[in-house]
Length: 86
Image 1 (cartoon, helix red, strand yellow):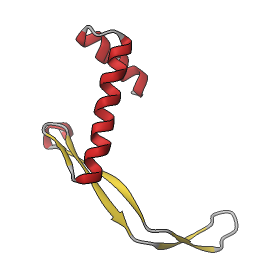
Image 2 (cartoon, one colour; image 1 turned 30 degrees about the horizontal axis):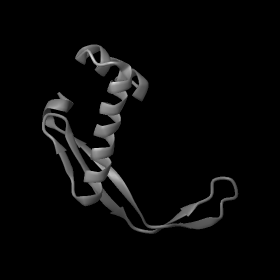
Image 3 (cartoon, helix red, strand yellow; image 1 turned 30 degrees about the vertical axis):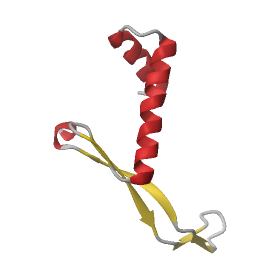
Image 4 (cartoon, rainbow, N blue to C red; image 1 turned 180 degrees about the vertical axis):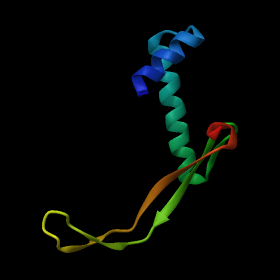
């Protein structure tokens, strides 16, 4: 499933126009993004999005084989709920 398919399904199931369904889906995605920056976002029956900090580490360039340093960064982790995994 991709974003355009999700938008079509939301429009079909809610009776909204495709334009309004785009606004709804984009709004949900943006709210999740903003929420994860502040704290974890928990959607009961679906899962939890949380921000994790990854430390800097050593890696290897696959083309040249030279050792490189991969910078520390933030990443989003998703943990599905029990109902989602079923």
